[in-house]
Length: 101
Image 1 (cartoon, one colour):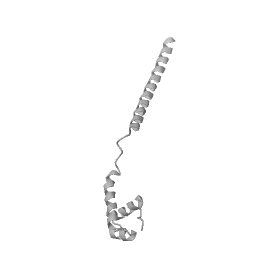
Image 2 (cartoon, rainbow, N blue to C red):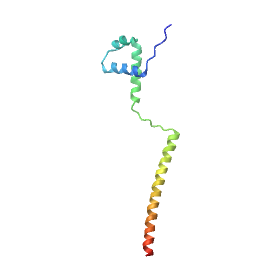
Image 3 (spheres, rainbow, N blue to C red):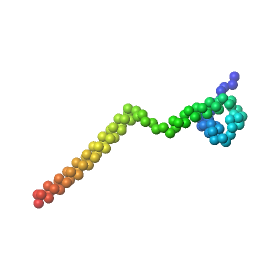
Image 4 (cartoon, rainbow, N blue to C red):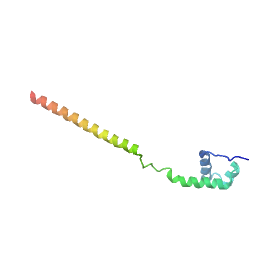
């Protein structure tokens, strides 16, 4: 009993792109790689179904990613507040030293 052949996703993609670009016909590819035409047609259908999702950005963030983003915003805000407090302190210190003269 013969076992089924397995093909890598890169191989499937290469064949579908050759088919879509018009470099080779479906019959040529099937003959060259000893495939049934229905197999190549199924790969093409799957490829075309997944193509619109290639350039979508992942908009949903996990709870951990949301928490990390929230904490990064908090650190940024606190750093800004600390910088402002340091500047205000140096201005007040220099103003009080001038008034003591």
